[in-house]
Length: 306
Image (tube, rainbow, N blue to C red; front, side, top):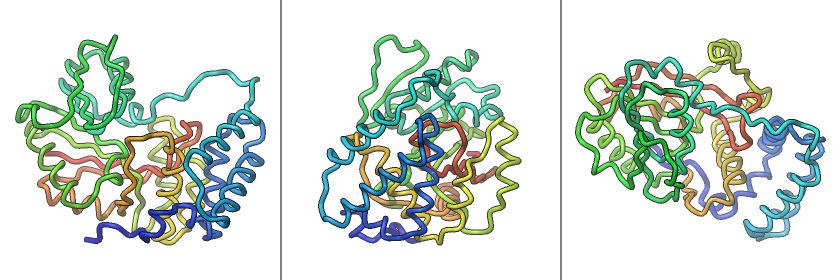
């Protein structure tokens, strides 16, 4: 199973991806949807990606320079007339049917614990939430007493968790072996019959019908973004380039984010997770979803039982 389908030169200079007209067009449309709260999102996207194209042609440009320009454009096009209401946590919504008779939820790669905080607010019946992240620096003061933060899985007892969640973490790992080691640990800490749910930046290698995506999202009162159709028209290598550059641009400010480029199709991730002893229950390509946070890419949801 291939581990990294990104050109090493792209890992060094992600802006080289913009040389592909199809990827560039798909990214622009995606960013227009992700910045719908600006006054002129179309003009914003044209100017921002025009700046990136020019910078790529001129050679090296620092992350700080890109961040500075992005923030400048956000300020320029900010729509002060819109309400400050933030969209709900998409992952919490998508887990609605999975959190029944659950006592312990584990979030591997929990970041700053935002997801578990939202889960704790929504699900008073869950007795314990465990966040695991070796690098992040969450604010631990004032946490819901049911939330525990750990640096690794080693200290978690065997068969002690009912549900384990991994959100947008796998493509930052170094290789397949690291992923397999994590899945082996998660299998250890999950009780028999427990579930593993993976949200990942991915795509179907096979045919993917827009109607099927719409019908599935409608169950959760979510709506597909038009940028999903543009993404599906790309080749596999272009899809990987899209996912990488979008994620890289939206996380330039995160010093804990490694850019390894371990992107795979849904089929490849399913095969790897099954090789660790999990049984697939369901898998859905969700694409991009309307009215979500700016950092979203193209999401896949995979559900496995232990």
